[in-house]
Each structure stands twice: as structure tokens, then as C-alpha cells.
Image (tube, rainbow, N blue to C red; front, side, top):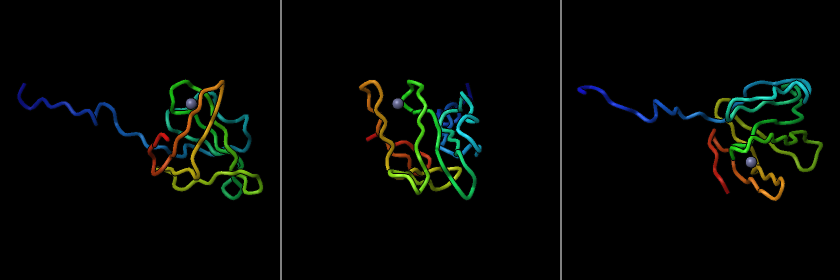
Length: 109
Ligand SMILES: [Zn+2]
């Protein structure tokens, strides 16, 4: 077994939240997204929505407004290690998913 070293970080690479793509309309967001991949709806200059699958594992889609004209709206920073401001707080069928996405990581609240 000489030299055989297992590395968990190799097996389960850290996948940061990242901007996977930009589509023009909400119905162009793929039904299935890789974990922690977010899709922006709109254009580079005019972001309307952010769509991704909730990291809670119950596979529900989160759609939050980025449009500055809307209240409330969220703001994103970074592309490969995404941050979303403020926190994501989704309640659905009595289950609350509340977390912060910062520098590509999920911090549950
Ligand atoms: Zn959830």
C-alpha cells in the first residue's frame, strides 16, 4: 500500500457557487442545473433574475429578483466564487431554507 494516499478533497472537490451562464428569458433556464451553478436571467447590463437549485437537497428551484427597480432585490458579486447579498430566505410548504452565499460557499443561517 506504499504511496497510496486517499484524499477526500480529491474525491469531493470543493465546488464553489458560480455563475454558470446568462440567459435572456426565465424559460430558458435549464430544468436541471449542476449543484451550486446559478443562471442569471437578463443581460450583462440588466440583470433581472437569478435562478438556481436550493442547496438543501430537496431539489427546489430558487428564483430571486436582481432587478434594481424591484423591492426587494438581491445583488451578486463574483462569477467563479459567487456571493449573493443579502441572504437567501425561501419558505415552501412550511420548510424554511435560509442561508448566505459568500465567496462561493454556503453558510446556513
Ligand atoms: Zn431548500
